[in-house]
Length: 86
Image (cartoon, rainbow, N blue to C red; front, side, top):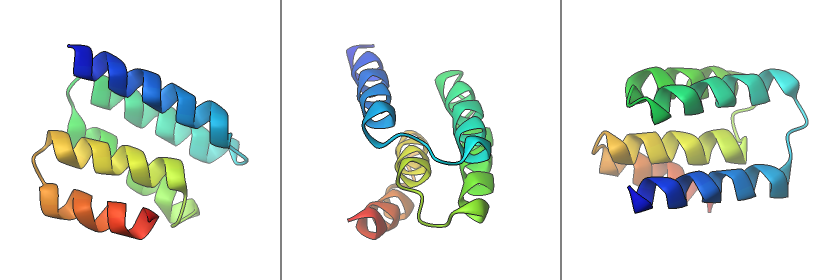
């Protein structure tokens, strides 16, 4: 539970730090976060992928997708995204 709360705090910090320029992307990411928080990681990833169709290198969408992939235990895919972010 502590890890989940810490993840949420980190996500909020990142969102404030980087801000979102495109409201459509922000909305899709927020919807993805709701799915993720409810344990529906595949639906969350679908929302992040929709956001990434608009901006394929959107840092926040990529980081959220990587987090959902970790929760699905798709570590190799998460690593690839993290490498792309770096």
